[in-house]
Length: 268
Image 1 (cartoon, rainbow, N blue to C red):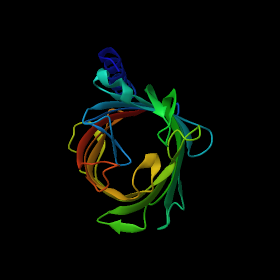
Image 2 (cartoon, one colour; image 1 turned 45 degrees about the horizontal axis):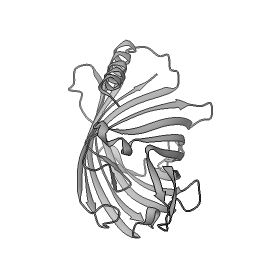
Image 3 (cartoon, rainbow, N blue to C red; image 1 turned 180 degrees about the vertical axis):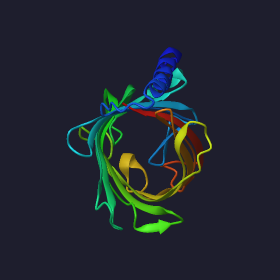
Image 4 (cartoon, rainbow, N blue to C red; image 1 turned 90 degrees about the vertical axis):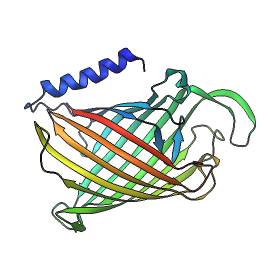
C-alpha cells in the first residue's frame, strides 16, 4: 500500500467520522484501518518484525448475525510484498439467551485467503510443483459466555475458538487445526477524552494448541496476554492494544513476541 493510498484511506475515515457525528443513517457497513507493529496470527509471525497495515470492509446481510468481509494485511515496507494477504470472508456473530446469566455469543467464519505475490513451488511432501499463488481456506467456530461470571461491575468472559486450515488443491499444504482457550475482561472507564461517548479498558489472554497445520509440530504452541483500550469519539471507535506471546514450539514461532496495534473503525 503506497503512501497516497494510505493517506486517502486514513483521511477518508477521519472525515467520515466527523461528518457522521450525530447522524443515524446506517448502511450496514463497517470500515477499519489498523496499523500493527508486526503481523501476528494464530501464533505465527507473518513477515518478520515489520509493521503492516490491515484495512478491512464488512457488509451486513439481511440474515441476523451474518456479514461479508474483505480483510487484508499489507507490509508498510513495499519491498516485502510477498507477505501481502487478502482474505474474503463470510462471518457470523450473534448473541443468544439475552437477559440470562447464560447469555452466549456464537461466532465463526469461512475464509478464502491468498498471498498474491508469493507462490508454492513444492507441495506438502517437498515434491516440486508448477508455481502457484499461496492460497487456502480456513474455517472457524467459537463460543463465548458473556455474563456467567460477573466481576467488579462487568464480566469475565471465557471463550473457546477452533480454527481449521485446508488447501483448495490436494497436497499444497498440510491441513490442520488451532484451538484457543481465552479469557477477557472489559470495563468501562470514566470519560476523560473530550468528545468521547464511551471509553473502556480490556485485559485478555489465551492458551493455544496446534495439531500440525502447515507441517508444524503438534502441541501447546503459545500463550498470549493483551492490554487494550478503546474510545467512541466523533462517530468512530479508536482502539489501541499491546500484546505479548510466549512461544513454546519452534515450528510455530521460535521466539517470544511483543507487538502493538492502533485502529480506527467507522460504521456507515
